[in-house]
Length: 514
Image 1 (cartoon, one colour):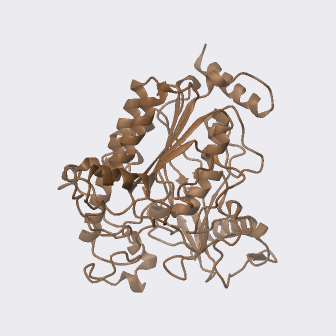
Image 2 (cartoon, rainbow, N blue to C red):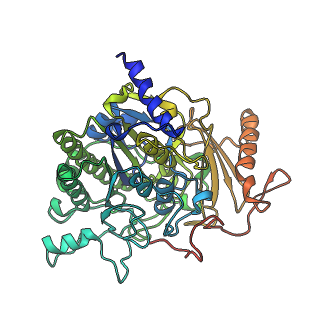
Image 3 (cartoon, rainbow, N blue to C red):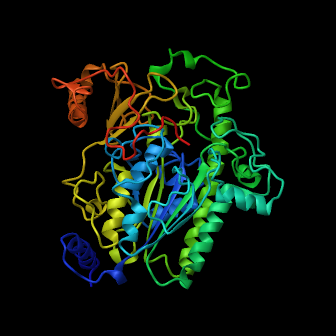
């Protein structure tokens, strides 16, 4: 059968399931392997055009699948990003607009919905849920909440394992805090590192799959790195000794800000959200961060090899994404929660089951988001996304039907790190519009000409028409929220910060994350 005909046949099967046509899909359901990292920025992969970073396994996965080059996270901090991944919904609709606590139960939940499609569902690594051992439909989880607050009734599975394998040692002996911008080499044997534990635990699950009942497997593997602390093993740091890495990108628009003044990192707060600590300091942190990315890359390679050895790879839909990025000193910003590329642009690779006959090594420029994975998984599993789910199945793009795809992806984050850092943005990966809720300030970046956002063109005559177009698009996007956001067709300055929308599923939500 010609490849294009086979390809159409697969699509017809999945489309038929959505239309309610009863066809036996059990033999056709792929394994779904979702690999998530924490705080991995989109340009920190060789396959994204960065020659300074070593990511051969991510690159190979992209070469065997599809690389989505304009992938974003709608709310660039851990818990709201992961709520979008879990539910397939946008921030306003899942209810978390910033760093709070993931709800206890949602109407749509990825593990539960895949379980209902007869998947065996298991989660390994960082979930960042509360309660920490909430399952949301998983048959089981083994979790690493490194750096997170441990409640009286919870100790992370990684920490319990660590205590058994290294009695009396300190898993945080490197001495760096969870949000520190400094860097150091991991002080303990490499096998004790949370990155190694997450991969080894995933390998055990993959190798034991053959002892199960034959259900298709949904396995979420969630690494706690390259999120700070930037603490790679020495052997990986050695790969970057003498290797040049990009200096931070510094926009014209931030040069007059108070945080742009040179600051001594030894006297500044170790977790400062803003600070000009000098190019060499930033490049040193970036070099350690890159080495941690390479660590995750190596472990992904081990996972891929195990899937091949167990005969699961060809029938697997494998995704690699991150919850958000890391500014790494760009524009003198650190960590996340910002609308800028370092914070909001993420890796996004999908390797499709071989029988789909999708072309390999392709790049897709349409704007995609974490919310799009759940509809994709549902379609692959023989179901379909509910009509009110915000995410869209990536199958639309893969079959060349982009006519109904979104033009812009929406992003936002409630106030964090500074009063002005409360924003909503729209982007298609080529242009980006930012609306500051508290001040009414607008920013516009031409990402095609200026991918590092060095120049804000919001006040330039040549971009007036584009500014008006995107302002109107933002009006349409925010209109459903009422007159506090849009009145008489105009964007409104907000006098307060809204962390949870009225659609958040839990009553009386707390104003902190975990």
